[in-house]
Image (cartoon, rainbow, N blue to C red; front, top):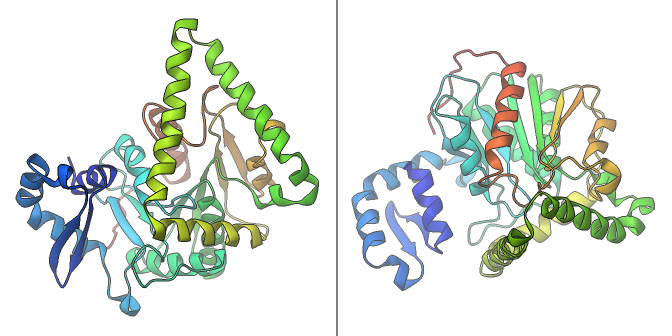
Length: 333
């Protein structure tokens, strides 16, 4: 298990690990920190400290936004923006399925550290990411990604890199809503479409299962949503970042792009049933392609097991077509 995956498991257990004056600190539920977890922390202390140091930068007195999830490999690295909650761990499973030859870096927006205010516009967040990506990899072409609302940040990031003279070979959006969904003519329909979309999606999923499996399916979906809400409720910094990012998304107005955009849809529903209007990104990209997910797919579960393996396969194919295999030097972080 890699250091990042170990820290991810700790996070899922409610344990937070950080560096304070070059000393490793942690906090979390007492029952979790006892016994085996404590022993693992002690045994891996040196590598955890090295990992946290490598992910940090003294740039402007803050930390670099570039976090190495899987830094090894000879292919062009992929830099990906998480959703509006800023949870970079959402990409752990995806990076694992892409393999050890595909470097994968997540981008952490400011606002998750005490005393650090979140940025209030998509353009500001993208500017920070652009600066840190170029510091990590001075030369393109760049491969970018964005999940959910993070897709708007990734889109603006690609715009800013392109405007600075860099090449963006591909922007991959993971079910990202388009700001056009906020237009008055769509807002009135949103509630109805949302209910209809969920009904048809779950109806299709149930139709592919035996009646004896229906209760388990519904329990699993309800448990996933409860766990998601519970994690967010206990993290006030994340809640603040979420609210600020959503406000920034509502104010963002994308412009026409010259770089190719590829949309990985969470399921195979037509755009008319998706209130987030992800296919509207095609209005801003001359080169816009789409890959459909499974019939029972959902934005909340597309990057976790077992669904993530399918999307990793789709992404591998797309990345291979965008940038052929080649050695690509990246900065050690």
